[in-house]
Length: 358
Image (cartoon, rainbow, N blue to C red; front, side, top):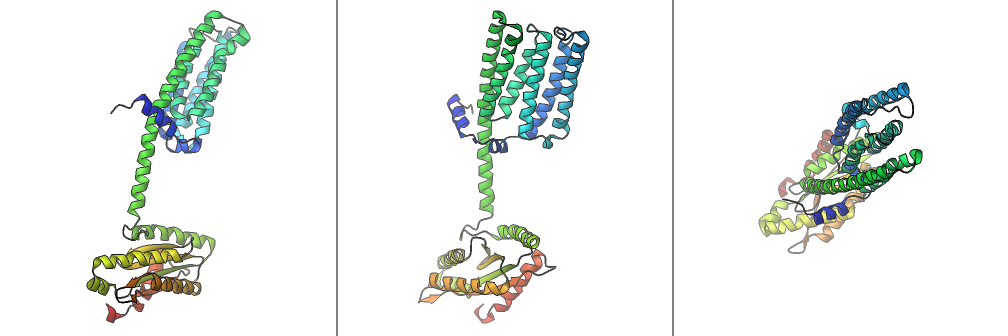
């Protein structure tokens, strides 16, 4: 489906304003590799132009040819990191290399004289910068291009023919730069939309739809991360596993809708009781898990008591009865991995279960 100019302008307004955020939604690896190929292409163009427009008018034959060969060599060297080690080239470095290419072209133009064709190469750099960098940086770059085009007036004086040619070139290039910016803006907005959709899907995959707590997958991922963090900081970590006592009887006597209500309200009570640094999950079925960083087992007793009181107040059952939870609590010890840590809490939960109520 074609994208109208209006929608492209709308896409331009939706782009991130901060450069670091702009580059996060850009395919920088591809941009770097294309940049490397363009440096090689630029070297070939300069090498082909040297015999027809040698940069010798101002510096002499030997120096001029040395300058031309040096520019070709610099272009080829600039391509090496972009093609072989693209990740080491930051977006700022990528932009700096584009400014450096302007300087090289301007230098060749100065050495060869205003009648030389080297300023035609500017278009390659303009289109590349417009396609890769944020609009504000593109505008600043176009100012630098205008300065390079105007430079011959400083060292050669006014030339009406060259002025007309330079103005025509600049107007064409800035139009092409605007078109490239608008086109890539729509591509980037599509990429932002896809990334946001992917992030939402990932979040949904880690969220229990009934209770709103993290699910077992989220728990497993967070556990590894939290265990590594507390070990590095040499801090305690306590895990609480809890289930609803006689939950099967709730479903059997009052129906699954009532059982779902109980699960939601228990989850809400737990989430409203713990600290911001703690995290709660629906571990599975009627089981919940609570991770308490920087909390030892003795301190966790206070948390268990608060959870018990909150659940008793907030989750009534028909007949003025309240939901009660059973708990298994474990503190991580030296030599424990994540699985052993969970198993320790699970064993204590099993021991707390009343076989009669099953």
